[in-house]
Image (cartoon, rainbow over all chains, first blue to last red; front, side, top):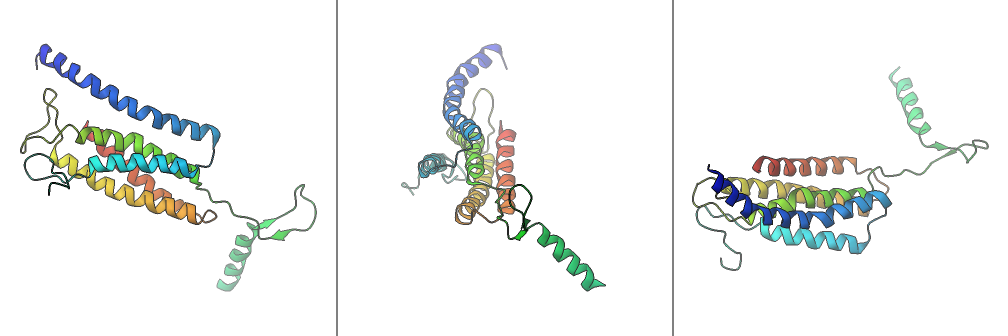
Length: 76
Length: 136
């Protein structure tokens, strides 16, 4: 792979990596806060967790066809 | 002989439940409280770690879009390989189930030992993390 391709790929990857980092940061902060305070999670804390799980599950659990792009559940 | 050993074991088991008043003096009382070694806080921390270490990277990987046909992902043209996406979905199903059971048990029975549920959930989360690490 040439240097130009590598630099182009890095330029494409950098915003995605930053976006993932920005999404992970508040979750890590929540964990650190929980470890520090040892506070029992409130119903609101569970709700935030469940909301995030539902959001990411909707992306991950899309059916994978043998060929072609992802099929949305609504289109099937 | 067997009976003697059984009685001795039963007494040793009960000895763990014997508690005395603070300070160590006074009569001994049988039936001390049992604290669950797995708390709701730990379940919350495990689920949050699962979100940070698996769900977010997995969603980002799937969002790359599927590779055309059976082609593989390259550095220049990154895409989500069907095989890996299916593996991610498989471990996620197992982890979600294990974490759901663990949370339900700990919230419903806070004084019962949830170690076995916690171990299962922990292993499921570790498998999920390993899949993500392998797909990088």
